[in-house]
Length: 398
Ligand code: FAD
Image (cartoon, rainbow, N blue to C red; front, side):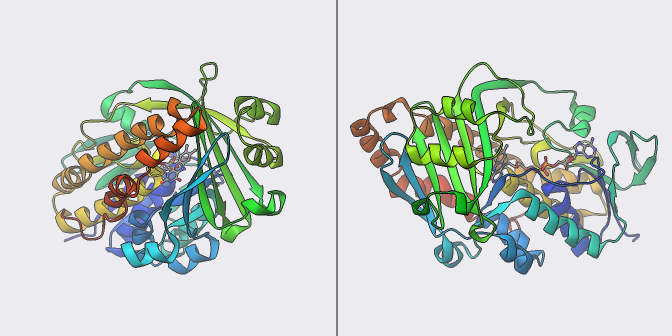
């Protein structure tokens, strides 16, 4: 049998993980990334055991440990009084329980680890400044069309080109995105600028009646990441690199605790973007072409699972191509069947968390305490997170 050759459009988190997993299985891979100098935005990403298990299996544990923060746990804090409640234990307990760590990383650091690993293992196969435009396919193969006019042939094509995927558009025409009524703020600050009592190795979910704010350490505690989501109707631009101002961010979170304000003031430039939601796709694959990550199941960030899903996709896809590679269409169909229910459930779970994190009952402290005791009771937290973290993309049936 000749060696399978897979083309991947998009060298983000999902595309590079898929590429590394395919390489490990002896598949030839070329990755086409639109950015001439790929680098991620300054923001954090939380990698749960379901994602880190895959990264460790790809041989990246020591590189990831060098850039990650491993929080001891997470807590919930009330927007007004700052009262805190334990949400969950992580740290060594996560490793003992789920067999893999919970890491909080800077996206730029993480992307660099993936990129360097791929470029070391497959020199010259990450094609930068290569934007996918479309494709054609027939019984013998698939041809990727780049905007440069170049055409590249392979056995399978994976659209890992993110939320505005060209490959998805070519497969299924464009789907509709709807504004959620939520605008998000983000910023990363050196930890020494943050009040000393906020420098612990924990993730904090601040919750309030019309918004929530997530804070967690990055880069072994050198940086603090902040993302704030507020209900607001007057900003609908989805872009990730639109600077806002400290004054506007403070205005959006005016009623919030001084600890939140202290972090906002420490951010040099807070960025803002509108959160859009999209209906789940009923299918992802047509013949020799499939999708992966945000290209097929974009999600609100309220379960911190978008990147983790993309990582799981990459491993399951590679396993399917290894197992059914002599029939690419079957391999891609098996991949989609293995992933569709789980990813749909995660996207819905993230939507549900908006109602939980932004609940009107949080407006007054007494009502908030009852709400938190009920909604964040250990059995409810267990039910919301355990099924996410215990999933094993390395052994799930394909
Ligand atoms: P991307 O990471 O977007 O990568 C797509 C790549 O394709 C990019 O490099 C892009 O340049 C390239 N590309 C695009 N078009 C083309 C083209 N036509 N041709 C070639 N290349 C192209 N997830 C978590 O798991 N945990 C978190 O804590 C978390 N926090 C988040 C916080 C925020 C505020 C947001 C917005 C998201 C968060 N996510 C989180 C979600 C996560 O970032 C995404 O789900 C993840 O990046 C998806 O990976 P991907 O590879 O599918 O897409």
